Image (cartoon, rainbow, N blue to C red; front, side, top):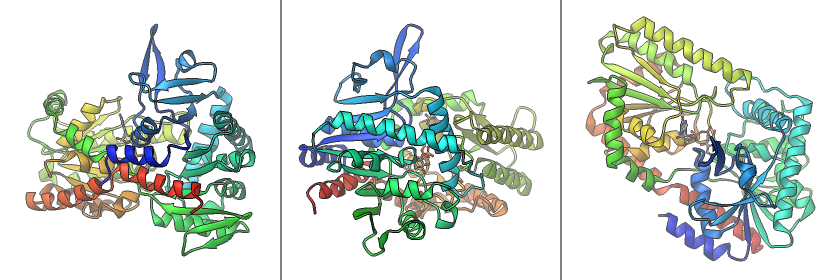
Length: 491
Ligand code: GDG
């Protein structure tokens, strides 16, 4: 089983001759002003949890957009700051973007075009030529920053996600000896869906600059290979999952991302979390009710209205559960500058209000909506309090929230209700699988979860915990690094 220590040893052994560079849009540490003081925030993301230990072990460089308002204040003349702040182990090199660049690249092409294009969630992608041009320009800015950092050293570059689809090719054009891998954190849709992108050839060509391209599941790799086959002149080897394009080979393989199982499990069992569970119940005015919960970044792909509709249907169909079940939805709004996200927030507000009006009695309300930024201990307390936990994405690359719930339930209690349209559903087959579009069936699953005997809960949870324990975040990183170094040795 992979642990932080064994990953550390692997990195020291295999990467020691190379400079290891991670590139992502989001930075692992953000400096912000709080009055005159400067604070450091760690953004909540699975990516940071996965790659921070790798970086700490190999002492490389992480290149990312400097988005904090105090970020410029703390960097040196090369735009670098040593992190983690308390015990510096590697360099965070910041890339600066103007407001216009951020709007066109991040809010525009990445999140209004590529994100809805790759998620089949019936939100129309918006393709704006000027956004595309800004996206290309920002990818160039990142490429230059990476190239300057590497100089003439031997290097592995590990690129993250859909914000930087053109990066590997831009890097290779400047220095073909650099080995690059990229992980695509969102689904890759079928070729029919992808061809709606007016610049599909450029994007594919950009991604095929990589030596290794990672997706969460094999299905996304297959979609990618089919898209390549249909869209550009390239040779696709379906057996080896490889593409040859312009004389260069790229492997497209699955690497299911995960969480730090042991750390979450340990933290969930702490005294602080137990105390927070009591405080949270008191704060929310909860007594003996059974508790359901959902916790998401507020995104239209996560199926939040769909789960509220299922809750509505459940309470309508089974009045005996009124006043006996409460559903808590937590999560912070995200990307609110994009109109579809604003509309989603309004839709959720309306649904919560309607359901609470319909079934509320006196002080009691069936849905509690926690929209504020909650500290990790509170989120952990919520997972531990949840008799059932809902992940109802319409489409999701993996979904770490589901794995975090499983990792938190060291007591082997609780039921996970999970959408089959998540990557996680391929591994967590002992969850109650629901179709978020099928409201009645979904409502039945809520009832089944509430009525599931303890022994069955335990049997299912135990199996899911085994899966997440074994396939943890360190295995994800180790598997990718193991493959990556083979390209370095020419294997
Ligand atoms: C993309 C892919 C893939 C959520 N709300 C709050 C909060 N979170 C934390 C969760 C979890 C993380 O954020 C979300 O991870 P997900 O995997 O669920 O989803 P995306 O953000 O869409 O990530 C996804 C992932 O990349 C990794 O490859 O799994 O499919 O879409 O860790 O706990 N954290 C805090 N407050 C919140 O309100 N603090």
